[in-house]
Amino acid sequence: MLKDSTLLQLRLVKILPHIVDSLLLASGVALAVLTQTNPLVQHWLLAKLLLLLLYIVSGSIALKYGQNKTQRVMAMVLAVSAVSAIVLIARNRYLIFS
Image (cartoon, rainbow, N blue to C red; front, side, top):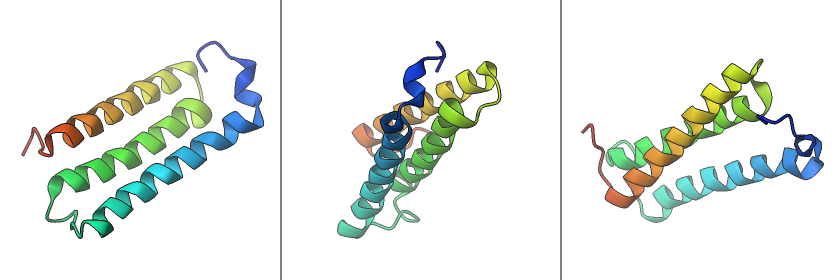
């Protein structure tokens, strides 16, 4: 995206992020259902699901909907930050700010 690569025009590159995001979201919901964990009670799970939604939205802005490079870079930084926070919460199962 930053180099204006022609690879962004490939059909697979346009479809694959939607598949990955759908699988990630489905696995998060499945985690809650299979473990009978209520995200409203287990705040770490709620945070992970909300961060996943933030990742999906900011990733979409970074790759497709950003109107200029500045918006796209800021969205990319936000997406990477969201993934980092998801990993941190997954490893520790607690919220730093709780």
